[in-house]
Image (cartoon, rainbow, N blue to C red; front, side, top):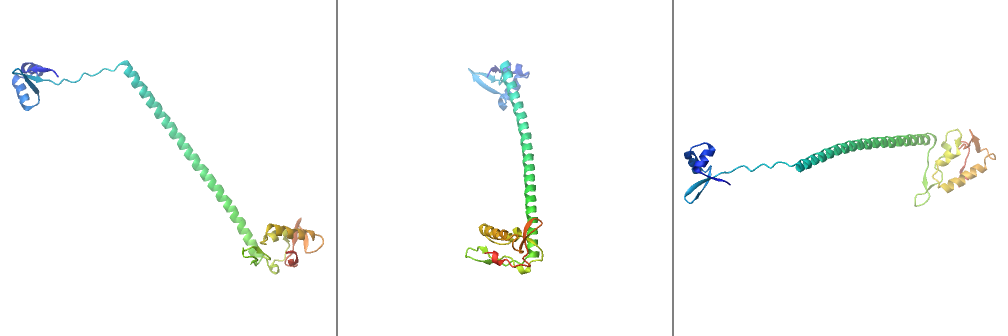
Length: 202
């Protein structure tokens, strides 16, 4: 920190010596006394460092990297947005498919229930403690007066697959031998409203 005499300080600041003394008394100027002489301490601004070509090159590199990163972030945000849109579209499509499947199943179930409720009066009984559903599910006396496919008839029975197949084979062996079992529109059919089939259901 350079130091000036009062006269030098007055000359530097273009003021009188008295003004310098007043500033020293107010504390706006620092001073020291050496060997009985008062000196004013002058704060000079630090010298501004000039940027070297190497510094400029470094700053330019940093700016380029920042620009590159900003562009990369923008690209990733666009891709992320597209992926979100695709995901939402897939979810909507899958939801529509599932709704359609359930709708079709619901229609099939309603049709089956309608057929059962309009054609048959189910009578279900339990044979074992495990609740195995067997025996007659359909009261044959309440069937409507029209041929019924053997396949549909057996579907209304709560038999196990093995027993159902045995009964089916019994009916097929009687095809062409008994009038109780016949073909209608190319399908093996029966007429529960006319004939009794209890002897074939065991």
